[in-house]
Image (cartoon, rainbow, N blue to C red; front, top):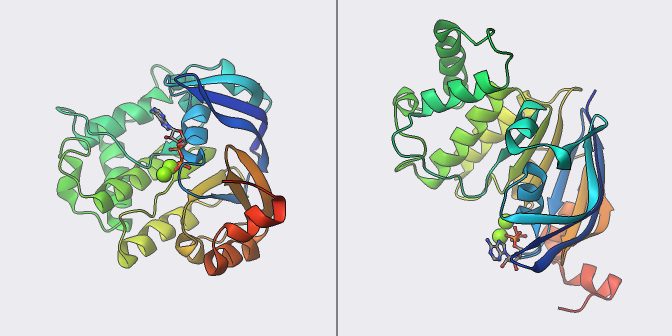
Length: 252
Ligand code: ADP
Ligand code: MG
Ligand code: MG
């Protein structure tokens, strides 16, 4: 089963410290939500965990099943089973969605055991159907001209096909209307398994009506300042973040 541990993680961007010591521990089968005001470092956390070169990790440790994640290159993290659905997925000109997906799947496999084209197409078409995606999206260039909602659905398609052991979803709900939100949430819920942990980053509680978290963490100014169960998300939705600041004596 998956065991993911973040201890005292610090990271900076362009010399400015954003993450000031993040502690978080999760196991397979668990869904953790991270909520917090804008600009608090949520996306920085996601990017630092995946090894984005723009973010310099300056302290702490991250392990996945006992292996040192911070020592791994970006592609090694993916191969170790980490997956990030980004808040702002990038476009890749000249690479079709299906080519991208197939090489991402093969990158996680041993040489010589690549997925057959037939099997890949069958899997991709099945998952696209589940996500109610137009089949033509397989042949479109990755994210090029996709709407916000289409990009997010496509991130979930990648997640489903890659079968990761640790899933990080960064504001997957932004840009989704309520129908798309339900489809995306169904996709995530169907992926819930003892072998997989989820870290769901969201600004709004709305998503958590569809994906029930086991734990909710509030992030402010680069730290996790409060943790609880689903009731914490409900209180944040009803009352905003000010009461947390007051309770903990956090200044703006
Ligand atoms: P959140 O996802 O919680 O809204 P971010 O992690 O995106 O927060 O941003 C945290 C802080 O880091 C903000 O002050 C933001 O301006 C800064 N930041 C994030 N990315 C960059 C970047 N590429 N260059 C400079 N500053 C950045
Ligand atoms: Mg933001
Ligand atoms: Mg963000």
